[in-house]
Length: 119
Length: 274
Image (cartoon, rainbow over all chains, first blue to last red):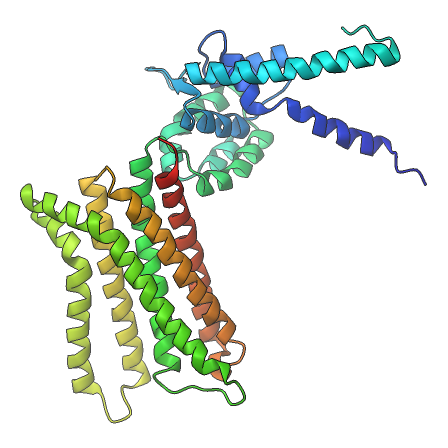
């Protein structure tokens, strides 16, 4: 019996999908301009293809805010916008650099092996 | 009202979390429509929010955790004292279990150490608040702060008088024992609630909070170890079977859990990087 099953592949793919770490997605979403919760979910869904639920989003916002990586802006509305801090921008830049290196190595080696030119 | 499930799930969060993010989450649900998935997601993240609440205000978190830990620690210690009363002071020694005697000794010593650690950890903060209450002539806060002294003294005085009035050579009846025990828990609750209220009203900040929060965790660790011994003793101290002991042990486990979680939250806030 083979250990390989489509389900197994799906699990591995799911694990690899952890690259799409919600804190990273939120930081990336806030990198250009401040956004409130709904705008973040819309932006992440449209530009990164990941749907963040309300529970996940606010768990992440609470964690990032507590670590000083994002900060809330004053608002009269219930929709309070958040902006990335300098520490958050630095953390995002470091992580992006790391991911970029991994992506670069992966593309290069896949190109050698499969003749894949990438997207 | 839209997304009733998600709104209900929001009620599962700690009050401080709801105060900070509740309106924003409701606005998000209004915009996105919510639904069962949003409700499930919110409910799923509620438990971590209790265990690791956001540390926007570390002093506030330490104060809240200290007040809760003090109250549940007092209840736990009270339950431990009831256990001691029902076993050691009545000479319960199950035949064939020589370990019971030293287990009782360990129990007594650890309970005393836990009380000592809690007292030492909280003393600087207590003195700080008492000085401020006196300086600012806040009589009510001073009374709250003195409750840990007033309540036990009043209880012991009442206990002595009660035993003299209703006691016999064999002690007091079961009914009076129940009354005395409940009064003891009421006194312990008052003694613990006093500093808790003072913490909320005076809102102390600064370095005195940290040792109190950390020592509270140490006191809790010790008293929870005592509780484990208590639970273990149940297996061989014959008369611990029955409904009453079941209720008692459920109370012990509940108090131990609340105390541990609260103290851990306070310690986390105390040790977190500013």
